[in-house]
Image 1 (cartoon, rainbow, N blue to C red):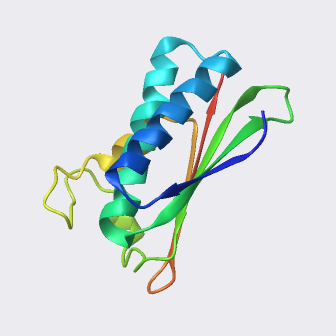
Image 2: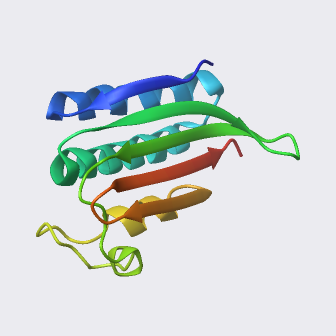
Length: 133
């Protein structure tokens, strides 16, 4: 699988990203439940970019571990306002956008690896990995 970069600027782009992630996960051999998890994570994190940063991108990559596991890495990045307090943003129930506050912490629970980097005024990068189990 080659790396793919998907621009994220509109609701349509969110749908494109979601469908692309589902297709890639299927091609890599993920079970349906894991395809759904990855699709849900892609939808949530892509929506955050469109809603809070206005534009960004999703990069899809195949992943492999030192122990031979195979999986999918998704990198969501933007040059938006950043997240002022990442620890607070990762708490269940916390929302700056009037939502339920389940997006970031819920996404973290659906993947095997979750890393968020954010600098106020410069942007945010969220990297997730799900391994084929």
